Image (cartoon, rainbow, N blue to C red):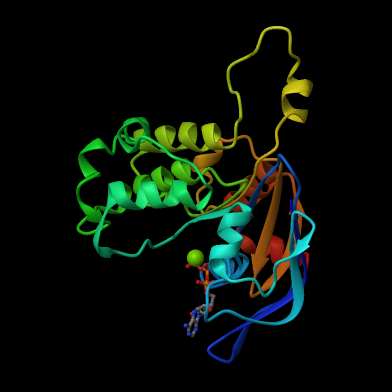
Length: 253
Ligand SMILES: Nc1ncnc2c1ncn2[C@@H]1O[C@H](COP(=O)(O)OP(=O)(O)OP(=O)(O)O)[C@@H](O)[C@H]1O
Ligand SMILES: [Mg+2]
């Protein structure tokens, strides 16, 4: 689904990412962990194609196509969707409108009210996007927009940060739904068959791993000071960091 090769990125003339190699296979959920300021947000903003993130070396391949220099709206059309760490306020645009716009990017029509019910956002549809929203409400609004857009690759930048424990479950279920992941058993299908049928992918940045109580992650990466220092079992990585801190990851350097 996504392949990043030797990616170096400058922000404001300073190199933040020093040669990243990372893969998100079709149907898989990949986690990205790392200390504050290690470059996690820089990486996913660069994958989405925002200006201000200058690729000086390497490439980004999505669905077999080199998208390194494609504009952000083209990437969105191809099926990449992003939920911001700190979502911007958009004055003059109602949440209902941005939900409709998000759907139209992928040529779809949706019922904003129906979608909003799934993340308890019905009362926010006629408010301007993120204006005065609490931290957790903004995160739910981000997922609502992704539900409308229905991308093939989800880039989630700390989706659970600032979200109360109960709502994390709500978000987890909504994300699983976008990913087309059946958490309920299906008669006549083995778990192996169900897993093999997964087509959509996600790259999730998380500090606490709380979202992983609801989403079955497949691969984990650790980013430190602009370099990938390890990859492996996401839960094992999380437990190791909880127990020994990022120092243990740095030993791998
Ligand atoms: N516009 C900018 N000008 C200067 N430095 C920047 C700019 N944007 C990002 N940086 C720097 O790049 C580094 C990486 O930032 P980034 O936001 O990618 O970190 P992060 O891993 O997402 O951290 P966090 O866990 O705190 O969200 C930081 O040191 C940050 O200050
Ligand atoms: Mg960040």
